[in-house]
Image 1 (spheres, one colour):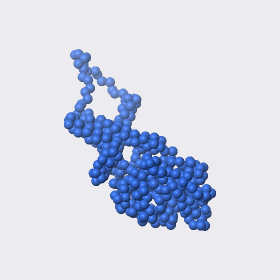
Image 2 (cartoon, one colour):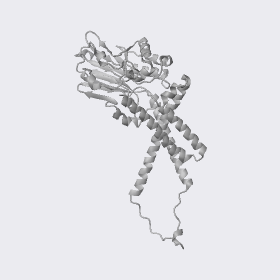
Image 3 (cartoon, one colour):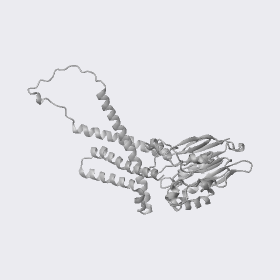
Image 4 (tube, helix red, strand yellow):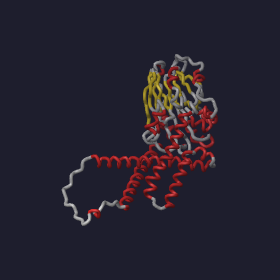
Length: 407
């Protein structure tokens, strides 16, 4: 896990460096010719690179209000820059393929023409590339990239803030009592309440979730990016969740960064049960199942606190009973399945959130998004309701998950 976290941080840093170098080469050098203008553009891109690479150190050193403004500006630029890079890469690849096609494909033969007569062959005219034409083409390409990249960023922003898609699917649990056949769980995860996501978004999310009329709500971590004092008003919208068996929460890594103990107490005050390495019974004496919750797989370790402890969560549980495990990260699923967990409900990955990460997320996680099975056990990994970093989603729309348990 530390290697995975280190690799992710290195990927962001490397991407920031290479992306800004590419933008400088393709946009600044080709469009700006004055030394001062190029230097200023280089300074701005360099500063953005440094902020992205050392964002936590930089933000911690700033006053809270200024840090919020810098955070929003930095993450917005991260998304816009990525969209510009994608647009430029597509255009450059298209140009390259067109050039290859012109060389490989046979040309239509032109009618023979009489060669011009010159007194001295060495003085025959040679083709000259016009600097004005070269500048025109560069500006046209840059304009096309700005339009395409800006359009992609606008779409990504709309998709991020629009209502999540609803994914509904049935999951068979052989040990489920017949009386609980059809029990529904609505999962909300990776909302990331913070500078971008505030009370208005939360009110709409709660209204949409309540419309699904579940038997219980499972909030599987990464709820917040900030402290209770700053975000408690927005998060208190979750008190409006209405279901037969109530709402349950497990911590995510970002909740640890934001103060896991403080948020645990706050959520409990909203009548949301926090399952920190423990299990509860859902149902009644006639028919019930165990709802098991564990702390985040890595958050506790990074904060020198007690984190994920499946043994403690299962202590005293009858292994013959049906069980659903709430765990923020889709880690340790095979072990959990072999320990009797019929279904694990997770998030964390965002499904990649943005291209090209949507294509690479499967390299980092065996279970990256969707439903998977191991023996008779299943795991569902949600793409999440919100977003982290750039306020955009491209290729991985947000979702609310409704799981229908069948016997």
